[in-house]
Image (cartoon, rainbow, N blue to C red; front, side):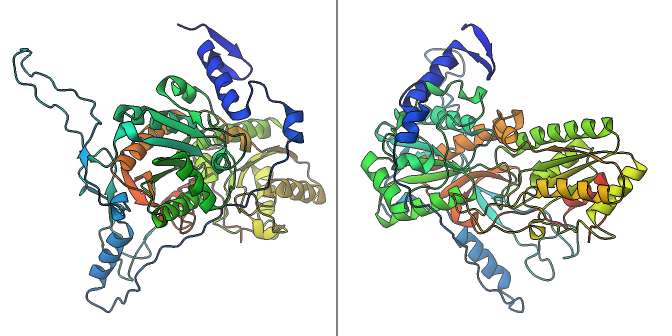
Length: 529
């Protein structure tokens, strides 16, 4: 057993030290970064890879007696999974994936072996997307297709290994790329994709360094991956392969895929990355390439539609509520203390809402889905004044995209094309100071912004399990011949969805739903309008 060493960066061992030096050698060209060399090296600024896609839904006339049938036909059409057999006439072969070997049931060596494995998923297996039948559009959280809230079955494809596959494992070259920002669980997914590929018999597995940038940036080489190399990467946060935003044109990426002779591409990322994966899939089909492009949904914001949650979200909530607990202790220990915590959430308030619920110590939770006023008789500041008067201290949790209408919009965007938000946390900090100074009341504001601490940590147990299953299912989907799909969890079941259906718009908190109502019950906050 390797000797354990505790360092300032966390808990590691000699094998991990070798692993990280090997990683740095591939990603940076040396085991020690050279800042001067990086500054002197001139690189061509890439064109951002930004793709927008929308799903098409059939126009329904609810006076038509057959509208329900038309809806279901349209649903089946939109959620039908793209396959490489759509452009290639391929014959399937028996799968090489099996965890249960042939055994003799009686223990007699002369007995006929029997196949004990029965864990394959049938291509016709489906899972229901929705399971609640709402009786009225006014029901809490109601999602209705027609004014009468008619029950319509919405089936999606179940994920898992198939009996038949469409690739020869010993001929496959598989690549993994992680894009966007950091997120807990990236290493867990990379690890499981490698493990599962090797179980199928794939020998040629590579990592593309630093997101889509790795497809074109000179000096960035593929990183050969194997079970031995990735064995312990799940013990640390971050991405073993590195991340970046933006990238070259789709055609340039596919040029690189062709030149590298990649057969399977596993893309880990959020909304923008999924749009990029879909564009790559479309370009591969246009060129009639036998390439399976499979995405795995990664975002701590949990803002990808149709799925229960994305990996990294549970860990982010756990870490965020630690920040809230710290703000609570600081506020409670100070005279007229006000703890203010800003959490990530570029377009949705899921982290803020769930962290507020899990901590149980938040008096005000502000999210982008619910507008609010800071000033005025019914504003947030007036409520904080009452909390200080009646309680002596309070805690406020605000999502980064909340209240943007109260701030000046810079109009700037990042490398992924996302709007750069104005800082609501700093704005609120100054407004609270000014308000209490104006009324002659002492207030001690404790402002905490744990953004990078939340996303850089190791996945917790819940996320680690989710990452394990999503990574395995991504490989099963690729070998089954699917492409342009994402591996996710819907209604507690693991399923495949066409990427086109999850990039239509970000998922947002339903401000009429039960979870937001539960948050309001927990905080006791009024309507700030």
